[in-house]
Image 1 (tube, rainbow, N blue to C red):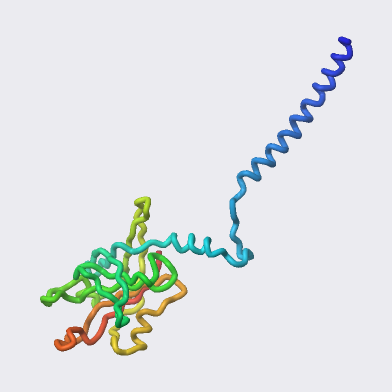
Image 2 (cartoon, rainbow, N blue to C red):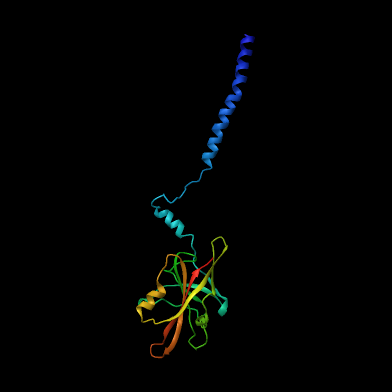
Length: 212
């Protein structure tokens, strides 16, 4: 009986390394599977779900501050909509910038549209009084803040500055048209003041492309 028990123990000892080896392979396989990515998106993935599209869109945030060093502008941005007439609303504060909330967000493909007052009701200079002095190559910095408190900063370089007629549909389309890459458009009044209509005859439009 003692001899039989010893033989059994000897065989068991011989099988222990084999069992340990099999278990180690199984455990390694389990760890690799557990650490795999939840989802991998490739160019062959096909149609992306609406939920995923929503998550991608939500990564972009609304602009909060505008800085143009060349004309000493450092202003708060507030969201604005569209009037019943179809005109873009203007910011309530003469020294704030209005962001068209139906346009692109910070760093997003498309056209981020901002407008500002040229002057106040007294004729004193407002936030975009010197916008016409911006030149090609100048930089426009737009900042915002994530929910976690991190500062998000995007820099655009000016590509075009021109005067537009607000009554010319082609000029309006050019200012508000979208794009396949991140762009920015700044708009303010300019030209001759019409005391009857209480508006200026033209608009200054500044266009820029995202560089970083």
